[in-house]
Length: 373
Ligand code: ADP
Image (cartoon, rainbow, N blue to C red; front, side, top):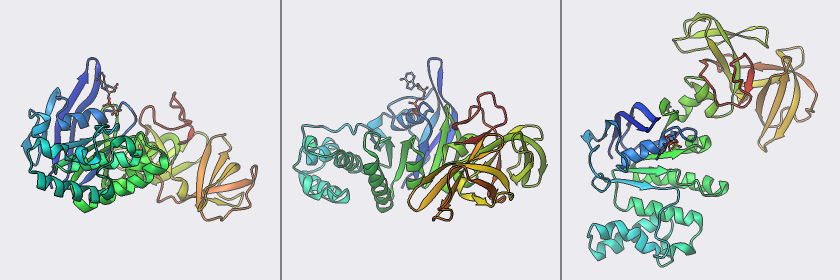
């Protein structure tokens, strides 16, 4: 299992700075996901790792060896693309065997390794089929098998499920995850789908405008996002925007214009009094209480989600917050009902406001407002 490191990698296309100088370490055997909106630089970084593109500055290291100037075929890094890039007229067997034939491996060994690999991706009986006779999900597995058979030190996957429907994606997410656990190879996966990132990864690196915003486990990013962008990009969030009014060790308070109160919540170091900040309250840490208790509000939406129920509550300042409850604790709620809202203060967080936060209802002028992402 090999480590991959990017050191001060930078890349521009003309006037567009696709990557600002960036450092990132991928651990041996790790499944790391690059997550970010379209245009944030994820594919550029992946193509630099594969050697399909040269960085303007910086280096790519595999287990401490500088591979920046090596052509793709000398890096032992595999890549799976969104369009799979399979040979449609060839059989499954020939597609998977392709890399081994190019490396002049003997026929008996090719037969053995291809059938092993097809078993691994659950395509045991399909070796004589043509690619055009396979479903999208099966083609995806052939693409995986073809990349894995050359035993790459690192496997790069660029939105490999982008073209598949949602149900199939969900199944393949778990399959790829199990495959990774079984073969223990270093993998870098690119997606703009936050749920996919949370489900699949050991760690997630969140990108925005060519910069790495934060890297951590799914849980770290969800529980302790560094700013409002990361909070809004991962999971659902209520962001109560306002101004920092006081700071104490490990916590801070924010005054929200619409809610006439100082809201205290845990915070990282580095905030200053007077700066724009938001209090992050995840929907599952909010609860509905009797009217007269907590923040007053009115139910404006109830969505039944099977094992969960999601409710939108409009506050007095006309902003709204989303509440999520497991089970059917409030199954008799109707639109227009008056309720109170409380949240678990230890689970909220004060976050610095990042400009143009990715959140529905976010206010471009940066005026204090409650945002429901
Ligand atoms: P992502 O994979 O996150 O969608 P990309 O790495 O593809 O992002 O793109 C990063 C930025 O670089 C975007 O602004 C994109 O428009 C720009 N870009 C990407 N490829 C090219 C190219 N070949 N020529 C010019 N600009 C490009």
